[in-house]
Length: 240
Ligand code: NAP
Image 1: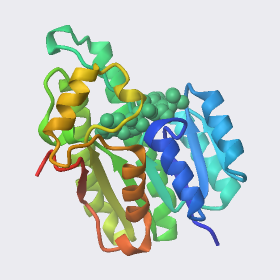
Image 2 (image 1 turned 30 degrees about the vertical axis):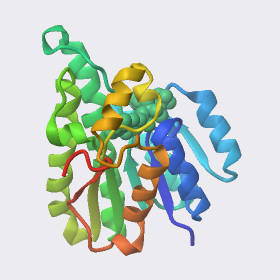
Image 3 (image 1 turned 90 degrees about the horizontal axis):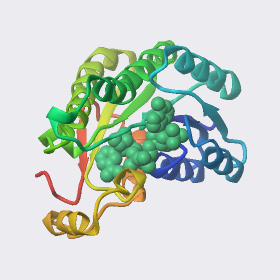
């Protein structure tokens, strides 16, 4: 029986690429989206048998409904990838409380809600894999991205704590910490800043969504069965 992966933020960028890669590797794929309906439905059409589900990961009812639909449709969820995320770059003095709450709602509360309700399901099956998408900035902090960095740091602590809690139930919990990856998230970065980042990267290149998707696929596989509570950097050597 095919395994099922539920990917939040599967409509674009890293999530879309992961949906395609998991599909190619025989998974049933659930593609969550929030605003990008056209992109998500086109992707779902191209991956015959996949399921596209609209929902805001920061909304508890949406999360519960989406997970219920996915379980009803495919029978179970084996892997959840908490990938949905947003970022902004602002001085802390210009960051409003609502900027902070909105970003934390998606990046942190979304990860918590998805993990909480998936864990209920996975505990019954005594197996499962939760993979959270953090960031190098969650490890090292980025200037003018204090809110984003804090949210990704929270995802890392949550990952480590949950790995300890859910390990006895046969569930692994890991995080990936990508560096600069070519997606819409970086579309407002100037060519000069992009080039500066590339030069600072020991491997001398910018990451691709495929680089991250390959790591996610490995962490979801049986080969990664003894890995839990880890934060795996995928950044071309920026943080060593
Ligand atoms: P992206 O291309 O901007 O895609 C973001 C995805 O998140 C979209 O599919 C979007 O869906 C979804 N999303 C946003 N808010 C949502 C919500 N409330 N509910 C459900 N889905 C929501 O960005 P990306 O680069 O692929 O980012 C994916 C993850 O990687 C994020 O967690 C990001 O922080 C992390 N990351 C990215 C980089 C990088 O350099 N790109 C580096 C480190 C970590 P809709 O458009 O449908 O709303």
